[in-house]
Length: 351
Image 1 (cartoon, rainbow, N blue to C red):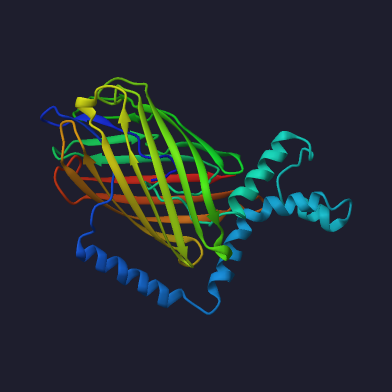
Image 2 (cartoon, one colour):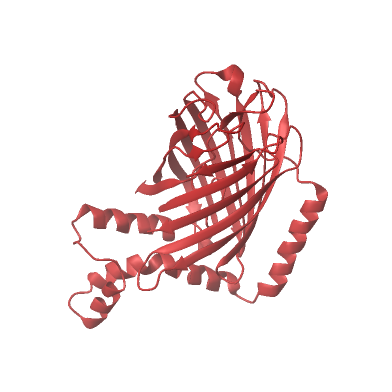
């Protein structure tokens, strides 16, 4: 959550009429949940760990992102049969001087050879550079029992690598129903961000990544579905892996250009803890909460837990493409309860 884009501010009215922004930041994990997480990680470690598994798994997972490079190398191998066979396993080649070929080859190296291979969590921003199209949908219940559906929910959109350490993401406005009350429907905000990867290393050379990014949200639809103001949101995100296990985390402050007294200035910190099990399964626990420095909820914090499962990267046979599926359940565990709980569904197509 994600992406993947960073969660877009949703502005809605609770039964009392107070607007809010749906943001997330880390808060201390309640001890029972921490015990469950530690126990789950230890169990998976005992079930799946084996001698030398880190290098084996790193190489195994990287092969799905290496098909494009194999096709490139095969295509440059001349007219030999081995070169033709390698090239045929990849996408159609347009020529070494065609800009699309150069861009895709360059981005493949940037994402598969120079950084870890963790899928982005469903909400927490990842420090990796990624290239995919995503669709997300959410079903959220407010304290008053109102069910809101979010089509093309936050994180829907496209991410592309545009430089050695640079990525651009574009997200269309979502369409939400029953936002703050029955019959309040409409489009939310469009978003875009630019990410710069400061440092990274793949599994064999350190297994970490550090990035900064700037998210910009543009008000498209009507209030209260849209925030009604431009928002600039700088992020600092880091991630570190230890074999099958990784932690990704990010901090940010959302700064609205208007309506500050209604939207506030939420500061956020998120953490996602992932474990790769049986190659394709990524059980994940995200912990995040919202703290409002000002505005209607000034000084208040809401903590949210989100257990989720991602399935990926699943290769599409005969191509270099992959898909990732994810489902998560957000649970509000503290007051103010801006929402009680929410189901989130995600589909990514990596190209």
